Length: 263
Image (cartoon, rainbow, N blue to C red; front, side, top):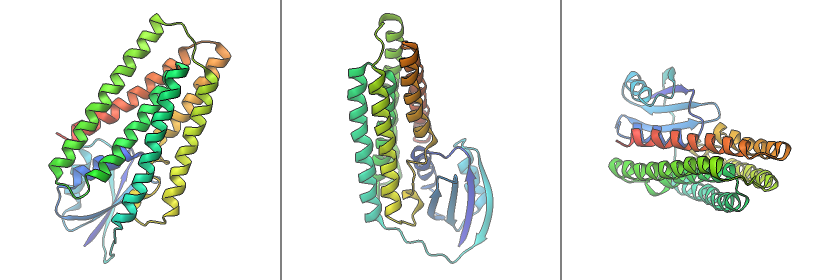
C-alpha cells in the first residue's frame, strides 16, 4: 500500500474536509484519509496512482500539491462510535450558538451576530453531513450536500438583502455591548470544541481540531468583536453592517463549493 502526503493550502475548515471526502470517496483505490487541518495536510492510503488522486484534488481549486509518496505497512483503525459521539457534541455546540447568536443578533439589531450565527449553522450542516451520511451511498451524500448548500445560499442572500435594507431604511445603531459579549462566548465555544476533540486523543485526524483551527471562524469572532468596539467609538452602524456582509459572503462561498462538488 502507498501513503501519499498532500499539502492543501486552502483547507482550513470542516467544509473543505468534507468536500475532499465527497470527491475522493468514489475512488475505490483509496482505503483511508487522514486529515491534519492545522498543518493543512492530507495523508491518503491507497493502491492506485497518486497523480490521478492529485488531479481529482486539483478540481476543487484548493491549491493542492503532492509532497511525497512512500510504501507503507501502517494499519489505520477507525473508531466510528467515538467519532460519532464527538461529532454530535461539536454539532450541538455549533447549533446552540447558532440559536444564541441569532436570538441576540435580532434583539440587538446586529447583523454581525446574525451573520456569525449563520456561519455556526453552516458548521452544523457540515458535521450533520458527516453524521447522517455515514455508510450511505455517494449519491445520497451528494443529495444531502446539495440540500445544505441551497439552505446556506438562501439564508446568506436574505442576510445580504437585510444589510442593504438596514443601511438605507433604518437608523438604529446596534447594541455594541451585546455584540462583544456574545462574540466572546462564541469564541469560548470554539475553544470548548477544541478541548473535546483533543481529550479524545483520537488518531483519526478527521476528528482533530477541524473546527477550532478554522481561520474563518477565528477571524469572524474577532471581526464581530472589533466591529462592536468601532460601533461604540463611532456611534455608527456601518462597522456592524460591513462585518455582517463579509460573513454572509464567506457563507456563500462555502455553499457554492458544496454545490459545485455535489453536481
